[in-house]
Length: 131
Image 1: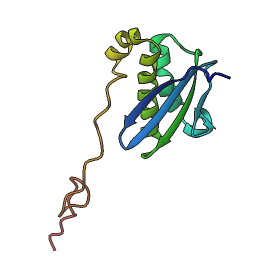
Image 2: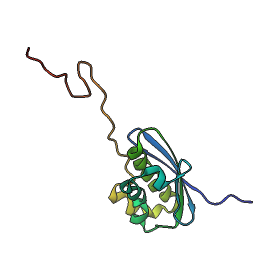
Image 3: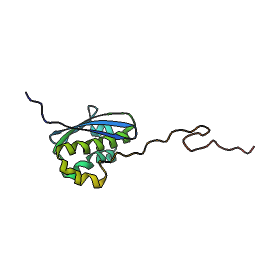
Image 4: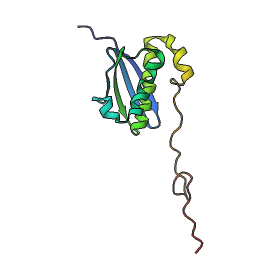
């Protein structure tokens, strides 16, 4: 039996990396073998994942299977959104005109700043004591 059509996209955000596969279906989202609502929890993150579909008017046309590693839940949600956007380009390259202006194809470069020596965190110094 021939394997069904699958479209792949890799998404990144902060320290999270998501491998995303889209298959024609009814809009079921599975992240690390768990339903999206159970994995993400917050409604804001679930809405974030649906954004590429809403922008391209393809809501409910694809099932999403995502594998995430690294970072936290918020970073992983952003990585999945990025991966879905890139996978949608494989479906139809014409969707670039809708995804690009919204900024869904751009990898968000913001990552945590490294800790510096002589400081408590990246910029926070130690508390000064006069006496």
